[in-house]
Image 1 (cartoon, rainbow, N blue to C red):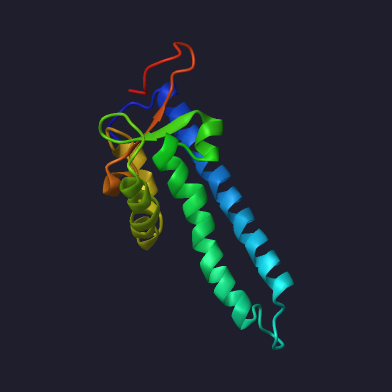
Image 2: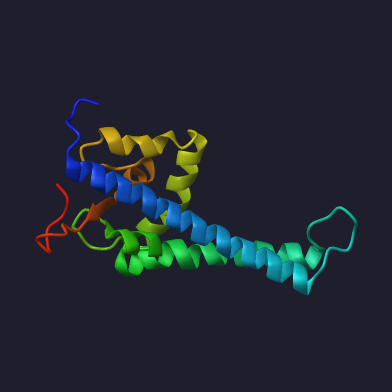
Length: 157
């Protein structure tokens, strides 16, 4: 790894991991709720099928909308999803402000897709990269920062 792992870095990495797990859980819950609502409104019409045609169309519309509303919009507005807010983390651009809507979209779509294509190994880049950027951060030119708890201001170095 080449660099010494400080307590602040370990704390940052743990918070980032927990924030990601919280966000994953929330998104999974949203998807589950959409599936339940869609199948309640439009039950499957054929044995062995999980969706009716109408249900599949509704799921196809509401699933990306839920993702965009939960993952992209909050990052562009204030730099935080629920998981990042709970863990005291922010996503910022190169000038320390919340990412633009385009950057948030690229980070959460193309960046995450590219990361999935390399078996999520792009997440491990936070261990080696000087700025602790994962692949999706590099693609969108964003950074995940943590406010120092004791001083009340300043970003993780």
